[in-house]
Length: 359
Image 1: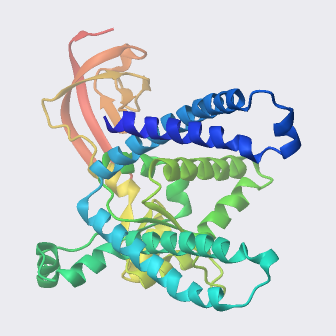
Image 2: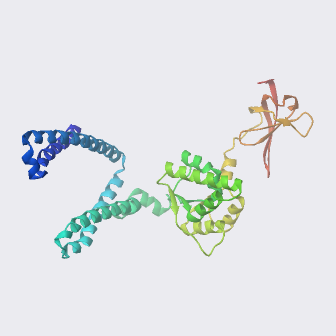
Image 3: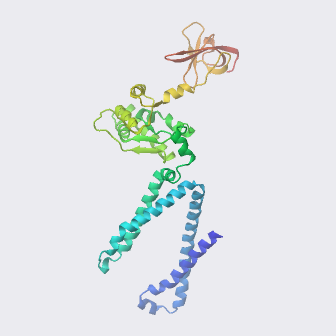
């Protein structure tokens, strides 16, 4: 019903504007028209069609806005409304002196134009500040809320901001981690990391150029997928020369967590008591654990060092040594795990062929 009312109002408004627009024609043109009433009806008809098109557009926009508001949390609606009101009040207070200034008649339009533009600017600023500091405002209003009490007693801790380094962006696995939801908090990319990516993308070396462009593409994709979480931070340190040292300093200052897969940067950050999440450590931790007696299908790729041994690899790169697997090189074999060995170089699994060859 409301949709029909919106469209009907715009049709009537368009028809009324078209009907009265004949009066805007010069008098000599009106005198040449033999049937002025017919002209009014024609202009009213064309204007009503325009009103119909505008009404349909407004109705569609209204329905989209309504759907967004229905899905929006009540605290966001409340804080944005308060921010909008405060912004408009500030606009009126700051623009009031403009209306007291004497102004020639030719420039009288400046006053209403200034009022409209100023109100829009301050309204947008108020809503933006509400989005940024809305939760803090709600806690001031209701300091006894459950999450405030939990934070005060140490039971609940806010997620720390994550700082991305260059190698982590180029690696690309951070994008998949964001999709899974295991990475919480704001993701910060500093300006000096962006500059390093740009330098790599512009490098004369083909390998560096490919890595730099890959990093920029991944970062652009993450910004498109998570526009509210990926933040480009303008912080820079002119007194520090290396990007790694800047990353550690920046993470310290914001009490954040450094996301990296650089072994040396990980060690330096640990020495300076900076929390680090290493993507390689995570990948190592979530590798499947194979116990003696487990079976798996494996393609024997090459001969082993010992007699009759065959070598294959799992999807994560783990090497599997298959006893009596040399005769199955190039074949897909079902093997039974006999033992596993963890070394500083990685993990190694020992197995033997099952009763039958799969392929």
